[in-house]
Image (tube, rainbow, N blue to C red; front, top):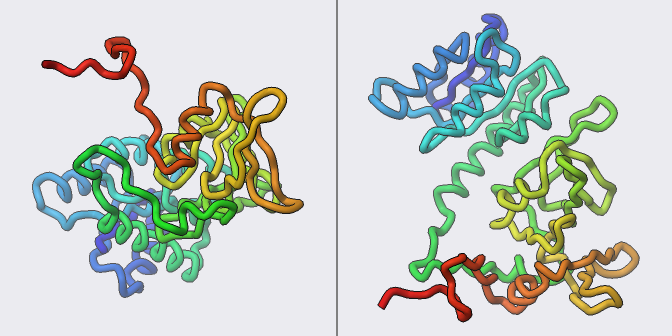
Length: 290
């Protein structure tokens, strides 16, 4: 891989570049002392070919001028953005880093094993993106494999299993997406529920719905997003439908809103949800040109 290290402190930048260069998976190590130089290098790597194509950027957060988080947002606007790993001395920006799609969040002083783990995740994500199937010609979503539809089974960790950083008593804890049973909306925040407890993150449920739809999460209520493979039962109750997640004493029941009931039934029967209706649609669906 070609990596770009960005840090305004020269000793830290030299150390990071040295550690990256020691890893056999890393080919070229480019360096930049600020966001402006980093953008110049990235422009050359993606447009005019004057530098090798950058696969991942290891980025400090607190820098003069454009800081690391702002730079990451600029990178996300690129047609084919590099992956981003934050390297910082501050442990209070992990949630912000997650919101801009960071692959990992490393704390200084760097440990070789943590850096190697971050490169492991980067390589796995690159491989998954290269091999993921494209859309089917008929426009339907690819059918999930057998493991993904086993009711009551937790989603199996995969190479592209996203890791969510959460703050817990001054410690940044990394929560694999595959361990999350359901997400509960709490204003502009979301509470991630796992078998071990719950964690509050500063990101709306609607954003997670968009990002995690392909990973098997489905909206059942304005307040709930659930892991589809964990649903073991959909049944009527006195006030409407409810879903049951899991089995035994750890099972939990959540309400299904009337708005989401029909779509959930179609998904559980192995059929794609109906597309949202357009104001121009007729009573039986879209009006096709003659």
